[in-house]
Image (cartoon, rainbow, N blue to C red; front, side, top):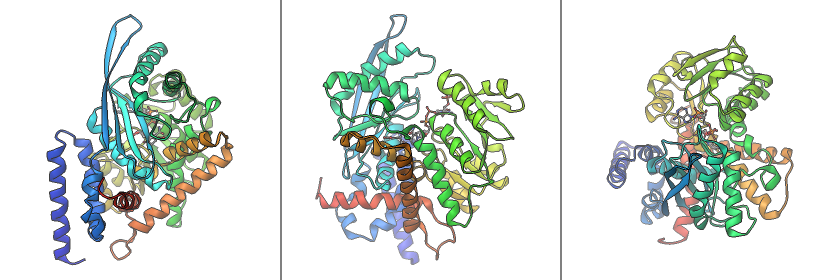
Amino acid sequence: MGKAVEVEIANKIAVFLKMIRTNNPFQEEFFQAVKEVITSVMPFALENSKYVKYKVLERMVEPDRIVIFRVSWQDDNGEVQVNRAWRVQFNNSIGPYKGGMRFHPSVNLSILKFLGFEQCFKNSLTGLPLGGAKGGSNFDPKHRSDAEVMRFCHALMIELHRHIGENTDVPAGDIGVGGREIGYMFGQYKRIVNKFTGTITGKGVDFGGSLIRKEATGYGAVYFAENVLNFRGDSLKGKTIVVSGSGNVAIYVTEKALNLGAQVLTLSDSSGYIYDREGFNEEKIAAVKEIKEIKRARIGEYVKIYPKAEFHPNKRPWEVAADIAIPSATQNELDEEDAKKLIANGVQLVCEAANMPVTLGAIELFNTAKVIFNPGKAANAGGVAVSGFEQSQNSLRMTWSAEEVEDRLKNIMKDIHDTCVKFGYNKKKSDIVNYVDGANIGGFVKIANAMTTYGVV
Ligand code: NDP
Ligand code: 2IT
């Protein structure tokens, strides 16, 4: 690429990002997600006049629609509580809207727009017919009783039900939304519409849920990392890994890593991290599940059971030396300072199991240090892929075995890896694959082609 072309592309990116800033004030997370995608996709899009003529990029950053609503409910003391909820239906060009619901006090429109935007590319990468959406509420399920969570979920669904449907929009879980919340939401949905359909995924396996859905995001991320290492003639066997989080994703990352011969040394939550230098074995993972999933307690409880392990309050695990880092908690949880520590300690691979856990500055440091970096939209797509399988099983009125679902999951993660290599491996530019470019361009193509085929919509 000549210098003049490079300058032209840089100018186009700058103008585009200025437009994003102006049109979306105070939406930092959304801006960050768009900046990452546009930097990869702009050079590719400019080479294809139909994408330019039809203003595909300009249309893709504008959600199809956003629903915002009040959720009023009564707590256990009879006091009225008021929360805000959203559903961001981003793009349904290649299939019905699909994406999780997040319940966390930090939830706002910027966060849900970044998640919905990334979901479009992730869902496209799976190869399944899934559009992109995200939703959630600033409701905090922590310290709430089951009855309070139930009343909140039921109240939320009174409004949400009119915007979703098995061929329209299919929500699932995310931070703060697990089996309990999905059960309450699906139960209320079914009651209101008087139909039993696959409109929500992540359901219990007794009532239409898919085997392996709970495990899928974590398992898929580890399969992705294994593909990345295999591509370089290496494998997970014998590697040490630092993991953050101790929720749905982190737990099953740890389980599959152990299964493939690697050793996870850390887990965390918003109160700090635990460091077990012997690694988490099956018994220890069961203890973490008991603490976080059953007791809904803090991760520090772990050192009461395993006193040789350390608890580091209010700290993040990136100061612990390891071959691989798999951030699995939340956005922007690994910044430049953390990246410097990981690089100094010889990290080889950073694989995002959470959505956008690594800041743009930290990604740049990893690129400069030739540390391989895998973006969440590729590495964590296993969760939504198995949600897609749940939709298929619901439509077929069939149940696939755990082996069948896991085989399909493994194949999809391999295909996503190959797509990243196809669009992100330029041997003239670098001897390592640029997984960010690969995932962004690989996800873009199908959606862009569909949008140009539909005309101006
Ligand atoms: P969970 O609610 O099960 O667990 C979230 C974990 O992250 C908890 O350990 C939580 O700690 C921690 N965490 C959440 N917010 C913060 C914060 N602001 N600061 C520090 N720690 C925090 O969620 P999941 O495991 O489902 O989701 C984790 C990540 O994976 C998210 O980025 C999500 O978007 C992404 N993801 C999830 C998928 C899924 O299928 N569930 C699919 C693809 C991606 P604490 O308990 O203290 O709050
Ligand atoms: O970020 C994600 O991909 C999810 N939270 C899962 C979405 C889904 O529909 O299963």
